[in-house]
Length: 136
Image: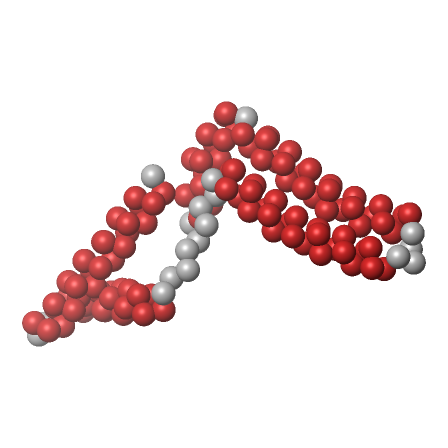
């Protein structure tokens, strides 16, 4: 699903050349992260303190560089979803699905059950429109 959503974005990036730029940035970051500790090991194997400090610096560089590349490439980052909202949405989806199944089978439903299904369907529609607005 995520690949399908990002397919149009990747086509535009390839056409504009920014995909190559992002690939180059990633290669430079990986090369830097490999070269720094390798140079320490090649020059002096006994200097463990320097190697540990370079390792810590590489971790920080990986986080900062990775964040910069993610922001530069405008990759959508999955947000943290609050637990109460997530469970409420899950209940609405289950309610709407079960009510739709029962209605398709021709089962007569009481008004509370039908209302729960409609509320679930409306919640799904609002969430879908919100997500669609984020990706446009």
